[in-house]
Length: 190
Image (tube, rainbow, N blue to C red):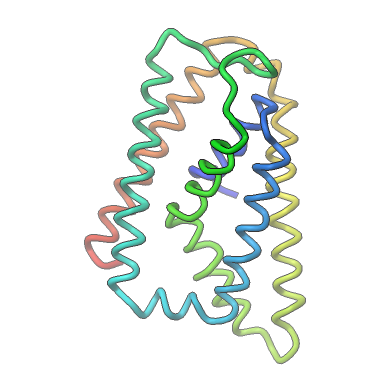
């Protein structure tokens, strides 16, 4: 339940109350697909191929660094993000594209869904992989819907402009740290 790039995006969209159903549904479906692929054996393939791991790691690090730079710019600007309908709206297509990028360009998503959940799911006794998958899919869906729609409870806090700047600053620091860790790990072969 760590707040990484994907979860920060879901939280941000939930606070804005903008395309929340689209974002949480897409994140859930993407998780289901990646978990199923991991349980079916993709996790073992990624772990066993250093070139694939390097490409995923470097691309993910670059993406996270770019998103961190955007968050840093927002944190340092005098413009503030508004909750609800106020403020510049993100188009539905752009929300979906960003959600897709935060999923498939984020190495943590692969580590969590394909490698970790896939490895555990593949080790289930005969007939146990499907119930394991269904339980993980239900937990993932509950997490994304809870985060996206539960963000509304934080809306009073984010009615203050400085709160958005603090959130964006924390997101920027998190993204830079993740980019560094993932990029360095990919280049070292881990």
